[in-house]
Image (cartoon, rainbow, N blue to C red):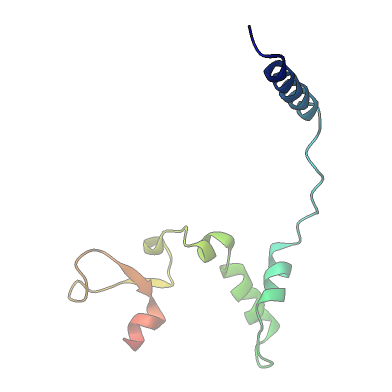
Length: 99
């Protein structure tokens, strides 16, 4: 026979689970426009024109910042010559040019 205290705990867990199933998830705040939120994080100098700012903000996205993209398909990256590495690797064109 199951101990009455264990039965009570099981009953409490079951009731809590059933009550939580019927509740809707908490309301989330509306997400801001992607470019608006990025623009608040990136500080441009005063010489940067609005068209250049817009172009930069269009090229930056969440996947790029997280590194979840294919650098071979991105025109900002170039393959590192095999004399510098053992396998196929890519890096930004500007960085390779300065190397």
